[in-house]
Each structure stands twice: as C-alpha cells, then as structure tokens.
Length: 344
Ligand code: TXA
Ligand code: MG
Image 1 (cartoon, rainbow, N blue to C red):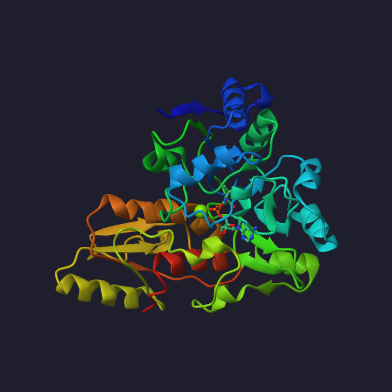
Image 2 (spheres, rainbow, N blue to C red):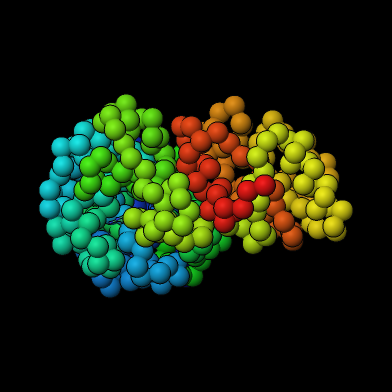
C-alpha cells in the first residue's frame, strides 16, 4: 500500500501539515517517501541509514553503483556531510541554493555507504520547493533521493507519474502538484578545477560561467563513448518503449521521415512543440512539449510528453531537436539519451 498525502505547496506553516509530519516520521523510521522538488519528484529515504537507502534501490530497480543526491534544507546540515567546502562551491551555493544545482563535495563518511556507492565524494543539493524543504525539516535528517521513477523511465514531474511507476513499492507520496523546472538539477563536480558539469540541468552553463568564470564539461557529455564521472549518466534513460530518433532540420524534414515510416506500415509518434502541433497529420500520435519560443516550457513538459508515448502502440518515434543553449543543453542531453544517440 502506498499512502497519498495531498499538500498545497502555497499553504502557510507547511511544517505543521499532517501529511508532511507523517511523511517525515516515516523517513526518520527508515521508510521511503516520494516528494515534489522544483525539478522532478524524488524518492526519499534517511541518508544516514544503509537499510533505509537500500529500499530506494529496490523500489526503483536501480543499479547499486549509482550514487544518490543528498537533500538538505539548511546550509548548517552541509558541514556534517562533507570534508571541506571549496571556495568556488561557496560561491555557487550563494548564487543558486536553494535551487536546481547539485554540488559534488569530498565526502566526510557520515552518510550511509550506499548513498555514495563507495565513492569518496558526496552530491548535495538544497531544493527550492516548500514541500521538499518542510519534509527535510520534519524528518530531521538529510534525505537521499533519486528521481522517483523506475530505473530507465523518464523522471516523474507529477504524482501520477510516480504512482504509475512505484505504487505498492514505496510507503507514501506527498502530492504537491506538478513540478516546475521539469528536468533534473545540474550536477557540478567541485572537487576538481576547473569546476566540471557532470550532468546539465536546471541551472544553465551560462549561469554557472557568469558566476564562477571557467566551467568544464565532463568528457562523456560530448563523447558518448567516454566513461562519465556521474555513474548514472552511463545508463540509457528517459526512453519510451518505441525507438526514438532525433531529426535535425525543420518540420518538413521530420514529415518526410513520418511519411516514409507510414509507407512501411509503421505506427508513428512525433515529439513536437505547440507551434507545430498540427504539422504532422500523418502521424498516429503527436506529443507536445511546451513552446519552442520558450525552452523552459519544453523542459517543463518534456517527461510528460515522453511518458505519453507509452500509452499508444507505436513502432517508431521521431523527435524535433532544439538549440543546445541555456536550458536547451539539458533538453538535448535527455533527448539524446531517450534516443540512444540515434540522430537522423
Ligand atoms: O533534480 C534532481 O537532481 C532530482 C531531484 C529528486 O533532486 N534527483 C535526481 O537524482 O535526478 P538521480 O539519482 O536521478 O540522479 C543523480 C545523478 C546521477 O547521475 C548520479 O550518478 C549522480 O547524480 N551522482 C550522485 N552522487 C554522485 C557523486 N558523488 N559523484 C558523481 N555523480 C554523482
Ligand atoms: Mg534519475
């Protein structure tokens, strides 16, 4: 049984909300609870307990070599988790916390081994969502939380997505409505110089550069065969059941691939944006993710659109592509993974 607690994120005194209090108690006791953050829903457990964290890996079917992000609600909690706080990390925290930025620090050894998957580092973030923050406070412990999807599926941006994947596998879920950003946090390694982006996300490269000057990219972000420093980046992810192909160029080019696949008798899906909603009359199913003129709306709607394909029997999915600037970098990173780097 998975309990659903409805919470209004705009309510005053969320720490007194009965759902959040019970969810916090359950986390402290070693159970798993899903909760909204500003990026995607997370599946939380007490980061100080191996037994609790093990339940996250089991519920998700997540490989044990993929470490988890530790979520805190107060900078004071950081001291216990890390060996040291590099000066550049301090600058990033001042600029982007609370918010969609995860920072990799040298680990103190205080969090459970399963959280760091045996690495000497620990990834920490302070989410910018009132329900997440109130839950961490109610639990009284830092919360380890990956995205609350079954491994390999697109991350959940609504409570319905979480329930689709994890009903009966987790103790409960705090339903605080749809998340805002829609793609996960940016992961930055602060144990190396220059600071290195391991996963693009809600805080853009441009924002990071404006804040600290030089920022590198993990080699795996540009060379698909390189071994990524964030273990999770090596897995195929975000993928609908039907194979996805990214199609560069304009809609007419996408239409040509649609027509060709239809001629071969295939059931065809297209991932597009509101501007081109009606541009694919031959497709069997069209999923719309936001507006091309405002990439933040595409990020917001991307995972819901990817999930929508699985409710149809499709043989192939063609996706439009986006400029890799700003949040477009995170969007294209997720689309490339969904497509297993198949580009037409
Ligand atoms: O927005 C987010 O970050 C969401 C919400 C729930 O906070 N969480 C999330 O967690 O996306 P997850 O587990 O789906 O992705 C965490 C990523 C993985 O790629 C993992 O390998 C990497 O962060 N990671 C975690 N700890 C790390 C570490 N010590 N060093 C390098 N990469 C690490
Ligand atoms: Mg994930």
